[in-house]
Structures are given as structure tokens and as C-alpha cells.
Amino acid sequence: MAKILVIADIKQGVLKSSTAELLSKAKTIGAETAVVAVGSNIESLTSDLANAGSDTQYIADDPSLELFSAGPYASCVVDAAKQFGANLIWFGFSESGKAVAPRVATQLDAACATEITDVELSGDQIEVIRPAIANKVMQRVKVNTDQLVAVVRAGAFEATEGITGTENVVKLSAPAPDLKAVIKELISDAIGEIDLVDADVVISVGRGVKDQAGVDLVKELANDLKAGFGSSRAMVDGGFMAHNKQVGQTGKIVAPSLYMAIGISGAIQHLAGMTGSKVILAVNKDTEAPIFNVADYGIVGDLFEVVPILREEIKKIKS
Ligand SMILES: Cc1cc2nc3c(=O)[nH]c(=O)nc-3n(C[C@H](O)[C@H](O)[C@H](O)COP(=O)(O)OP(=O)(O)OC[C@H]3O[C@@H](n4cnc5c(N)ncnc54)[C@H](O)[C@@H]3O)c2cc1C
Image 1 (cartoon, rainbow, N blue to C red):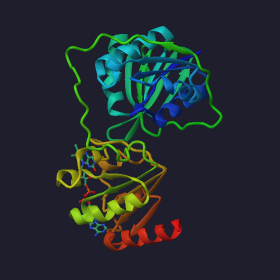
Image 2 (cartoon, helix red, strand yellow; image 1 turned 30 degrees about the vertical axis):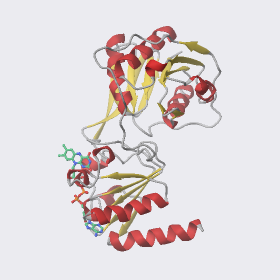
Image 3 (cartoon, rainbow, N blue to C red; image 1 turned 45 degrees about the vertical axis):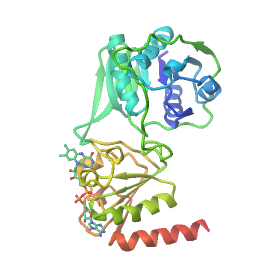
Image 4 (cartoon, helix red, strand yellow; image 1 turned 90 degrees about the vertical axis):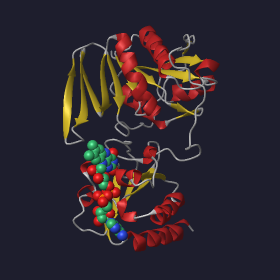
């Protein structure tokens, strides 16, 4: 039986949905499951981790682990992977996951695959599916080691109702601090904002909104819907949006229930970050805009007229 270790994605003390999604997939394919959680004051999450579908919880809980640092976090994951005898080690899609996964693979001498969308197990043989060349093709990758570290693409797996685990805690000791990189403080301008990768609804603006007034207009729609607020690269390059809001090949990959592209043409590099969304709605005044090739719903019109109408209709539905 395959043994799958999932790395718990915890942000500001809250367990993110990707952890349950990965554990559900692991259970669905009949694997034995464990989770590793690293941080400070996180022991209270143990029952959530079990309920999400893990049968063993490796917990590294220490004040020295409060601030994310790839070196010590990787040491904890390696420790758990060795104790559990994991064949597969899965990270959710996050900046920290992308930083830790290759370190873990190197220390375990295991293969490493990023952005996987599926996995197939047959005996000891592991194969994964992943997109390549900005989503133009899907690759089937045969893994030539018996251990694989993988970063799973956002939205690739779904949490299944009825999946549960059992509480069986194994405490890990905190690793020696990483003296090569000492994290003193975490500075974030996004505290309190909805994380694009987790958001159920994401609304992104493109060059069609023209200027800051256009950005602010669409931001109000995002606020109405409690949506994550993203952007094409054109708006980042233009200085209107921060880089951490960019969706696409060189930005974030999102897979919300609803993605709204407002004044975005649909360049291949933008599509690479959002075509995993369940429903896509595009607003564009150009009927030939490529975004309409991937949109489930398209509104052809001037966004400065369409967005206020959408806000008005949403207000009516809400009341
Ligand atoms: C290596 C590389 C990596 C890249 N990575 C990314 C990435 O990660 N993410 C990304 O987004 N891009 C990326 N790009 C850039 C990408 O190629 C496009 O240039 C960019 O996505 C275009 O942004 P846009 O759709 O906002 O602008 P445009 O292509 O200029 O489109 C603006 C759209 O707005 C519409 N419009 C204009 N006015 C209105 C109006 N009043 N009402 C309604 N619609 C209107 C227009 O019809 C048009 O379709 C990358 C490029 C390269 C070379």
C-alpha cells in the first residue's frame, strides 16, 4: 500500500483547504495517509488534521518555527517522511511549498515534480500528470525513483465528503536553527486581504480598466463578492497592481469556483494561471478577444458600463 505524507498548509494558525484536498485524494486512491504540520502553537490543529483525512499527525511545534524558514521546515518534513516511510510526499501549491519541496527531495534523494494535476500508482511504479509549455501540453511523467516529492497544482484535487482519519500524534523535535538564513520578521502588505490562491471567487483586472479609477471600480465589485482581487501582468508592469496579485505563468495559479476577467485579452501566459477555474466569466469589448475561447460566460461590452450593472444586480440578489 502506498504511503502518502501531506504537508499541512497553515497560515496564521489556520489550516488551509488544500490540506484536506490532498488528503482526500490520497485516501481515494487507497493510500495510507499521514500529515506533517510545522509551526508554533499548532497542536490545537491536531483534530482538524485527523478530520481532514490523516491517520498519523507528525507535529513539529516550537517557538523557533513560528516564522517560515525553508531550511528548518524541510528538516521537519524529511524527519516525518523517514519515520513514516513515505513513498509520496505532497505539498499544496504555495510559495513556501515551492521553496521546501526541492530541499526535501534533495535530502531524501527522491524525484521532485511541480504542478502535478494527477498521480497514477501501479505497484511500485509512480506516474504523474503535469502541464508544460505554459499549459499547451500535458506531460505524463514516469518517476524512476521509488520516492516522489510533488507540489500539487491549486484546485487539482477536491476534498471529498465523508473522508476522515484517526488521531495518532507523533511529536517531532525542532531542528537546529538554520544559521545561513535567520528570519527576523515577516513583513506583509496583504494581512487581512483574501489570498488569491484560496479564494472561492477571484476577479482580475487587465489593461482595459485603463487607470487607477478603473482598478478602484472593479475592486468595489470584488469587495461586494468578498472575492480575491487579481490582475494581468500588464497592470503590474503599469504600476497599478502589486506583483503578488499577478495571475498567470509568471504569477499565481488560481482555481476558484468563479474567475472573472475584466478587460483582460486572454494572452496564453495569463490563461496558464486561471484555466483551472470551475467557471470563467469574461468582460471585454472586443468580440474576438481570446479570453472568450476559455470563458463559460462572456459579456461583450464596455466594462465601465457593465461593472456598475453587475454590482447593481448583485446588490438586488443579496437583498
Ligand atoms: C515570459 C512572459 C511571461 C508572462 N507572464 C504573464 C503572466 O503571468 N500573467 C499575465 O497576465 N501576463 C503575462 N505575460 C504578458 C502577456 O503576454 C500579456 O501581455 C498580458 O497578459 C496582457 O494583459 P492584458 O490582457 O491586461 O492587456 P491587453 O492584452 O492589452 O488586453 C486588454 C483587453 O482589454 C479590452 N478592453 C479595453 N478597453 C475595454 C473596455 N472599456 N471594456 C472592456 N474591455 C476593454 C481589450 O479589448 C483587450 O482585450 C507574460 C509575457 C511574457 C513574455
